[in-house]
Amino acid sequence: MSRPRVLVSGAGIAGTALAYWLHQGGFAPVVVERAAELRPGGYKIDVRGAALQVVERMGLLDAVREARTDIRDAYIVNAKGRRFAALDADAFGGRVHGDAELHRGALAALLYERSEAKYRFGDSIAALDETGEGVEVRFESGGTERFEFVIGADGLHSRTRALAFGPEAEFVRDLGYGVASYSVPNELGLDRCEMTYVGPGRTALVYHTAGSEHATALFLWAAAELEVPRERDARLAVLREAYAGEAWEVPRLLAAAEESPDFYLDTLSQVRMPRWSKGRVALVGDAAHCASATSGQGTSLALVGAYVLAGELARAAEPQEGLAAYERIMRPFAETNQALGPRNVKSMVMRGRAQIAFATGFLAVASRLPGKDRLMAPVVNAVHAAATAIDLPDYGF
Ligand SMILES: Cc1cc2nc3c(=O)[nH]c(=O)nc-3n(C[C@H](O)[C@H](O)[C@H](O)COP(=O)(O)OP(=O)(O)OC[C@H]3O[C@@H](n4cnc5c(N)ncnc54)[C@H](O)[C@@H]3O)c2cc1C
Image (cartoon, rainbow, N blue to C red; front, side):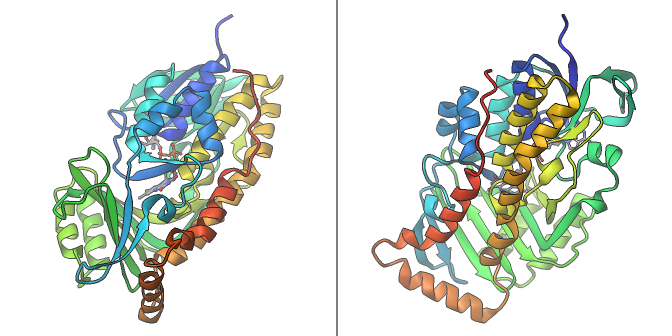
């Protein structure tokens, strides 16, 4: 019997992982990706808790560990660049028990190579039409094909979600911050470390990872109802305006944005949906439940969601049973991790000079004391509890 074909929209973390597990579950996945090739993407992400089990079950745990950023030290710097607090980078990033930090692009490449699927780059879904037994899909490149299921793994601004569930504004919740990230020349000569500068309402950091010839800048700032323009130049202007007159290395980092090949800017947002499936169309990863960059859990959610969705579809007698079970298992886990996003950002972006003076003064003193890395224990414990808040079913594949 031929394998039922499933269309996955998006070859990010969720899409490539889903393709792997769908094939394991007896389906024939076809992945359509808008970009011309697998997107390399510069920023660093974490694989934690239950997601580590998922990559282990894929046989990728060693490769994930090998690809880790190996950042060792995290410094807080003042306006003149003086390092006044030093912390262990894993403690600073909330990593424990073998949690791994790596580049998003490196993880996507590992997942892509591992998956057995047909990939179609440079194309996208143009229209969806559910028939009783499947979904008719019209592609932007022309042509219509029928699939057993269509799964949207196309990220925060999911096209699949817009086509099947309704406009983005109904589901995307802006948390009131802007986020930008891009590669910059390593002019500070950093070696596997990160530096954070905290200004009023705007934080900037720059980090260097093992084996990399460049560094990466990351900006996070308070911005109510930020309009994100489509064009790159206009987005650059948004960032320049947000950080105008800021101290430290910020002017140099801003200037480097002009030349950067991977400039990214968006609002810090979450996706909240009452349901993740409609008929034979379902969502996974950020498209379904984006937790925001400050949750530090978007990638782990995408990995776990892909595993559970494929597993439940494979073992269900009826598609609706499988989709319902996927939501039942994943939703509490997704919601627990989503709660981290708005909570964490409050300690990452500080509004007033008094709060900054207090927090940085405290860190300056405390980071010189023995057991200083325990300073981060409340954050680390909260993240670890959320990252392990699911019992992964064993689907026998
Ligand atoms: C600055 C920043 C920092 C972050 N830091 C962390 C972190 O520290 N830890 C963490 O866990 N997570 C972090 N994240 C979040 C993380 O990247 C995502 O949550 C995670 O990758 C979810 O994966 P996804 O596959 O659902 O979405 P994505 O990785 O966004 O992938 C979606 C894919 O769909 C494709 N696509 C989009 N539209 C279409 C279309 N119409 N047709 C076809 N394909 C399409 C895109 O090109 C992309 O390849 C961060 C995000 C940002 C922006």
